[in-house]
Length: 312
Length: 253
Image: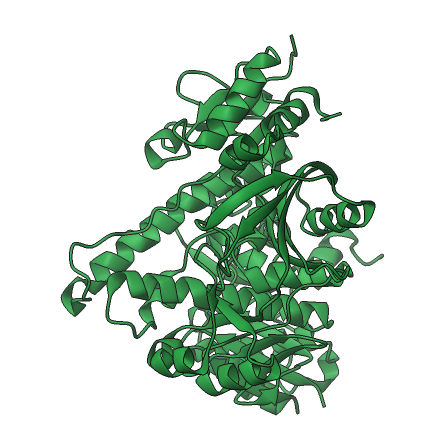
């Protein structure tokens, strides 16, 4: 039985949380699952050497935490149209949500300073707020990322599409949304929206979609995801586990290291010519359904890292 | 000539004061208001930040926008969105924040000095973390705001009407050090000895410091590395780091 105390920050209805929890139990570690919501955080006691829940459990005594997610409290409104009279109230609600998020991130930073291993550290999630910021770091590590432009200027978007020989896609700057094929018609139809908020335009990279999982920079599982769509998410037609070459393993490890990630899910485009492109480096990747479909055991590798301090 | 860029969310009196001070120092200054315009970021063979088709590569950026990587958009960022739906406004602010984080990162990667980087703004939202850091440094926090103190590179910029004791200077320096802020202001509760910090902000409001103009020049000169004798406004009574040094090592008899 391992003697390292481990927690998971996330919801126990999340398949990733459940599978890592099961893998930890199989190793003799009963994880504490904590959902970082305001009601939970409001009763924690903060001190220089501890972070204590109201039941006396000191999170500062943990050896490691798997950070699956920190909920973002986004204000909702029953109507879609902004009524100016309610604007101040809505903005105050948004600010309250932002402050609560700050408390959750404070907890992560505080635990890091107490020597708790955070998988992943808070800074990894910071880069994930901006895909181009993450790309800059991956690029600085000498890896290929797609040529891209982030703009709210339709003329710049048109010019970029021409420079890309008509082969481009667009996606949200802050991630999370689907990647779609870019055409001049799309730019014209959405130029008013574009003028109000920037969009990430990228060269379209063709080839096999590889999803590589790394722990401490080493590959712990890899799959090729079959799809007919520009974005495989939600459009998978099959998944096969693969053994990666040393070159791909090195690329994946360097991408994770560039962003300081202990655990990462890296999306790589393999055009078959050896010109691999890193599309995304995810600090909290989904792996439960992919593992099941491809016969991988990512949860066990992650559990080993959390419970033993090493996945090997 | 040194080029200064002031990046701000909306109309910003402090940014205007810094721009005027820059002119007085012979520095080329440009103010970019994000409610008016947005930069474009290119990542191709080259990485470039552009505004209205022209490349922007200043020597120093005073970052007064609220973009931060720790979480959600600020009220300032939400307020300037022109989309007519609640969710659209939130999404637009989030996307814009993603762009600004990358632009500021790109500048830093070119060697541009960014005062302050977005990580400092992120720390300003983490009040619990800050309170623990203060406790770790044996600094008691306060509740009532008696004074607001501006700090640049660990040096306290003292208004002509302020008389801060050495303990207060040390506390304000400690706050800036914990925040890793080159430029910040600290709200403090005054007491018998050391003051107690109540809050801090990475974006100095110069109007909270008299008319602000007296501090703008010396603070900017310090950030730009301009020698005190070349600053039109005398810095003698503004930076009180020397006071600390003198008190710790008094001149010999």
